[in-house]
Length: 264
Image (tube, rainbow, N blue to C red):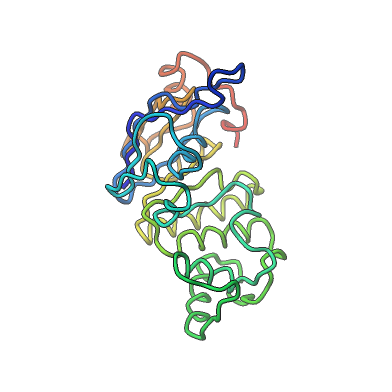
C-alpha cells in the first residue's frame, strides 16, 4: 500500500545550514499494516511523513501509494489517497463551523462543494453514529462550533474526518503529543479502533516508546535519516522499553538520549 524506495532529502544544500534528513531510506507497508515510527529529534520521522504527503519534492528515489507512482505529484494531488492528522489539535478542522459542517466537508472531499453545504437528515443521522465511536458525547452537539471543543475533542474529530473516506494511507504525525496523558490515551484507543475496523494502512509517528510498542503490528526506529530497526509480529508483541533501548544502542552504536520518548 506504501512503498518508499531509496529516498534522499537534503535541506539547504550548499549552505552552512545543509542538513541531510533522509539518507536513502526504503520502506514497504502491506495493506492493513499499522506501523509506529519512533526516533530522537532530527531522526527523520516527520521528514519521511512529509515526503510521503508531498509537502516538498524529494531529491532522489521513488514513492508509490497502492502501486501508483506519486513521486512527482504535488501535495494537493496526493491528498485523495491520504488521510492525515497533525500534532496541533487546531489543525485539520474549521473552528468557526459546526461539528456536522466539518464532517460534511470531509465527506465531500474531492467533490464540488460550497462553503456551507446542505446537510440532509440521513447524513446527520450517519454523523451521529460516527461520533458515537469517540465516546465523547459529541453526537449530541452536532451544531456546536468546533472552536469551542477541547484539544482532545478536536483531535478526535480530526481523526474521524481524516478516516471518513477510508484513505489508502493514514498518516498520524505525533497526533497525541499536545494532549494530556489521559486524553492522549483516549485518542490512541479510538485510533486503534478505527484503524482495525476499517483495515486502514497507517503510519504513526510517536515520541512515546510505550505507545510505539503497544499500538500497531510493526515498529520502526529512525536515527540520523536512516531506518535502523524494523520489528514486527511476535517479536514486537514481546518488546519492552528496555529491549528497545538495547536494540537501538546495538544498531546505532550510541545511547538513546530522549527522556521524553522513554518516559512518555
